[in-house]
Length: 362
Image (tube, rainbow, N blue to C red; front, side, top):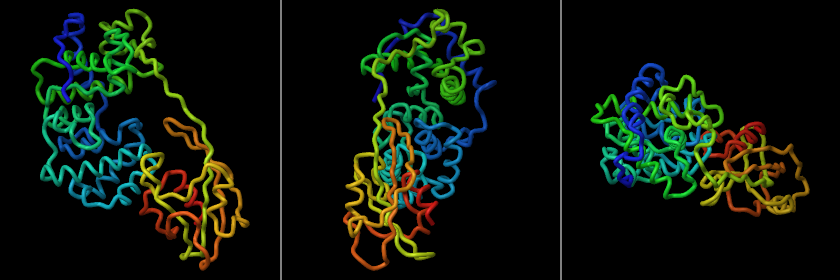
């Protein structure tokens, strides 16, 4: 999808002329360097890093990125993997729809594009799980295309730079700011310039123009920033719709049988859509009574374990594990699923708190 056209007339001359050169120079001198995905123009590696970095801290991604590349060194290896294997490596990164879309995207790239990612942002954005900002990042980093990323950090940086006071909870203002982002791009940039500019936008939002404590004094574009001139950078970005977290309690029926190397746990695949969709999990219920009801014999041997707090983007979960030991032979639980060896949990896609819980029960 192309951004709406904008000739930059709404941008003050001082900003339009100085922003891109200052940002490029700052990134080369003071920006982040040495991240493992920065030393490559391989679209697969850049794409993988961009998907992982969505709503996830760099420090967290640094632990996952090399493991993924070791197991899936190229897009064909990822496309040929089983979903459970992909989800197992993703476990703990959260936002599991990213992993499912990533797997689908790899399969589409292999099946429909001969294993080669498209060169242009418009074509990249047609692939599963690749939005406008991710497509722009791949096209700019790998092919030097003159196109701007438009993620949350960039919206914050540009809304402060331009004192853009329209409501970014609305589609119209989002498109207008995107058009302004395109108008701020460097003129006739080299491939290296587009890499530095794109990385500079990311670095500025992550390390200087942060959400709650912007470092305005050392900012490389502070002299032309309108929010800084107004003395109120925290006013931007304007967004009327705020995240409201729901608090929920879930009960987990943790059914085990066997001893030693024969120890097993009953798991079922979580439905899609929904939280932990597609992952293997112990049965989840909305009440203790419902959790006990899936246990053969009515749950008379159930033992309550300490509750676990687990934070998601839109929910605060309180997980209540109910542990029960079952005989190796006997009635099956009253829930879809199958027995799985506890020793094989490392090869399965499990929600992070469930993985930690089962690891403690081995």
